[in-house]
Image (cartoon, rainbow, N blue to C red):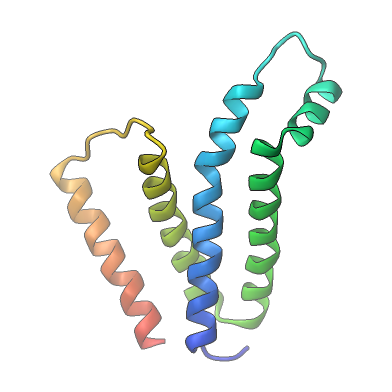
Length: 127
């Protein structure tokens, strides 16, 4: 395993963003496709024929492939928490930009998110 350099950091940011940005898109597309009258197979096929679902799904799965490559080539102790944190931030940001209603954060939650963000940045810089 190699150390986490510039390539590792950029890859972590891309994977976290791809995963996080596609979550609200998949959620919105899934709401459009909810129809209890269709069978499982028909619902599955309709999902993939709808570009609003299939394109974010394909991007999300490519993020999964990139994540596995990251885990194999770089330190797991850095990759996993950093990708998850960036994914969380990207999910919130893209969801907010799409007009999703967000729960109001308490002061303790905001402090926790700030500390977590600083820890992730520190892990990326130090390692």
